[in-house]
Image (cartoon, rainbow, N blue to C red; front, side, top):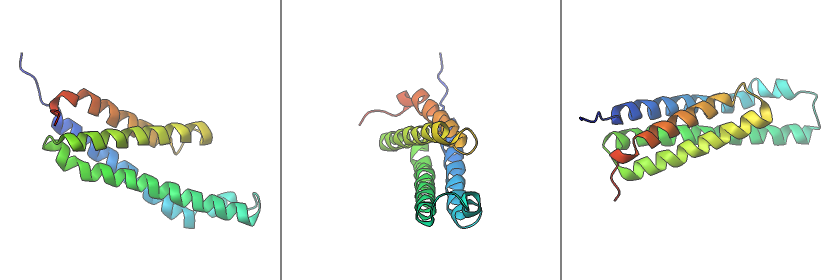
Length: 135
């Protein structure tokens, strides 16, 4: 029986994951200066608000980093590089964990994208594992 290469599908999945996560990271960073200060106005002290906005920005930078790592790995995954597969797998695990913690703490709305993209990326990577020979 002839096997069908799923590496192009993997590339599309990781590319989509990277774009969505990079956009979510940018929205987080931009939100620090636009909508998020209004959402927390009047809640807690000024110091607590500042610390929360710093955390919100750091989370956005981390999510942006996860998305950019995916975008860098896409070409190497399409060429069959095992190291890129390992890096993309770690990235998918961290995306999934970040989304799971976010859904647990903050509810479904924003972090669900991370949870779903991390899960989709991890499933696609696991299904194509045999196409990346061990070095």
